[in-house]
Image (cartoon, rainbow, N blue to C red):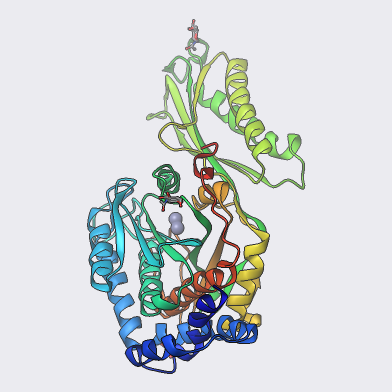
Amino acid sequence: MINTKRVPMASFTLFFLSITIILHVFVAATPSSSSASEQLSSSTLPTRFLDFAKKPETFDWMVNIRRKIHEYPELQYEEFKTSEVITEELDKLGISYKHPVAETGVIGYIGTRKPPFVALRADIDALPMQSKVPGKMHACGHDAHTAMVLGAAKILKQHEKEIQGTVVLVFQPAEEGGAGAKRIIEAGALENVSAIFGLHVMPNYRVGEVASRSGAIMAASGRFQATISGKGGHAAIPQHSIDPILAAANVIVSLQHLVSRESDPLDSQVVTVAKFQGGDAFNVIPDSVTIGGTFRTFSKESFKQLKQRIEQVIVGQAAVQRCNATVDFFQEKKPFYPAVINDGGLHKHFQNVAGSLLGTNKVMEMPPVMAAEDFAFYQEVIPGYFFFLGMQNDSSERLPLIHSPYFTVNEDALPYGASLHASLAATYLLKHHHDVTIVEGKNHDEL
Ligand SMILES: *[C@@H]1O[C@H](CO)[C@@H](O)[C@H](O)[C@H]1NC(C)=O
Ligand SMILES: *[C@@H]1O[C@H](CO)[C@@H](O)[C@H](O)[C@H]1NC(C)=O
Ligand SMILES: *[C@@H]1O[C@H](CO)[C@@H](O)[C@H](O)[C@H]1NC(C)=O
Ligand SMILES: [Zn+2]
Ligand SMILES: [Zn+2]
């Protein structure tokens, strides 16, 4: 039992030094080895994978996929062409998959098809922004994320015989507000999976650097919209009107007190009103005003409390000025995103793998941010780890931030993302194939 398991592991290192076919014969004949060489495999594997990812046959291939997807940005749950590109490449690589999952998602499988299972996630959707294609743009780097998980798939497929379990490739639709991750879970794609890794490109860090942290790293997020109704009329005869503009202005000011006066200063929260629509003329009081915005917290309790108070304050403050207000949180169409909370054990795993791949000085501790990511849904059901991949090159201009209309991907980062993904998964399986625990039936919890 032990012998049969150790044989392929010992060969993991050797594998890179030789040609595939020759080695397979060799592997079968190799006797079992000590646990020292098992560690050696885990520690040298990341740099081998990085070298492989940097080779033109892998790098140029990823670049082409990235550009192909970039040319056809598709919005949430409409990623038809994108998933076609993915399935075509998986076919060429000889990787089996399920499609469609959650409308337009693709789930691939590499390895033994037996436990342990570890997942790598890419989001595949674009943003509703203007580009060469009207109203659609890959301005968040999801084209790069997809190319990198495919890159990882290529690396892992090359070494499939050595994989001590199964790597599940999750190509997920609708990250940008559509909660595609939730749909992936509901489709049962994470059944038996014991850990999941995901990354996001980040212009603030350099190529070859990564950043993350243990615990909460991104916030829970909800949106709200309110219609404040009064009675329109002549702007010079206000006594005959009920002014919703003034009421809305007071509502906005009162909403600011929720964070500044009601919440714990050490419990980070945000309430932002980012939308204000009302009135068309300088001498007409309108009938109604619509305001909308976002709210963020890290804890579930604070989130619930904030949501409740947002509604109370809007309705109550509007009433002070004789207006009526209705509040919509769009929960049906746009589910709230939970906070992204990184598993402590996986953080250690990430530090080890990224440290040996990039050098420990390139693995940055990142402060939490109030932005949101639907990767959080996965972490509600299984341990997950999310990290940021640097893209900045000191010798070029500063890259625009994500969601900017000028956003660009520095493709030099692709081999780092692909090899990190592949290494995180392969070494996770090396570590855990002894203590296989099936997280069965846990995947439908409280969603
Ligand atoms: C999960 O494991 C159980 C038991 O081994 C198996 O019946 C089931 O098909 C697995 N599910 C998936 C999605 O692989
Ligand atoms: C507010 O709602 C009440 C009850 O439906 C209604 O009587 C009143 O006219 C409304 N006021 C405004 C300003 O729309
Ligand atoms: C930065 O860009 C230059 C010019 O394209 C390139 O030679 C160099 O390798 C890049 N540096 C990194 C870290 O990718
Ligand atoms: Zn985004
Ligand atoms: Zn994104």
